[in-house]
Amino acid sequence: MAKRKISHGHAVIGKPKPRKNHCFGCGHDNPQGMRLKFSLDEKSRQAICHFKLSRKYTGPPGHAHGGIIATILDEAMGKVNKFRNVLALTASMEIKYLKPVPLGQPLTVTSAEQSVDGRRHINMAEISNIRGEVLARSTGTFIAIDPEKMFARHGVPAGVVADNETKA
Image (cartoon, rainbow, N blue to C red):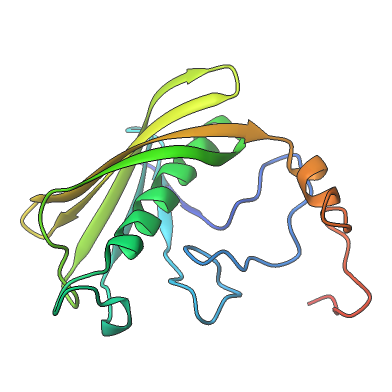
């Protein structure tokens, strides 16, 4: 069996971890978020997440909203950058909605790297149903950033707890 490890949040090895993860897609500190849980398959170099979508993600009756589908694909493609130990932000993405994505059924999103050129990472992702049918597919361009510089722009360096927060 392929070696897999759990991929939590957006932390990068060797850089301070953000205080909390409020990411809408994968953040365990966001009670309104999707809380997607990804594993990284080292052998295939894929990020994988098994999930079911509840009615709160409804678009057309009984099916997921297109924006939620885009969120899942974006989150999956972003996780692939962990294989290179970088945090990269979405610059652009193209989505092909192939079939309606049903609510309340087992689904899987898988993602993989396509190419890397300097800070530019091109990744792909697919959402499939239990029969292996691909329901949606995306390609995205991600630009690697320095998380310490990015977090400092928001007034609090990474790893530092603000005065109004307490350490867990």
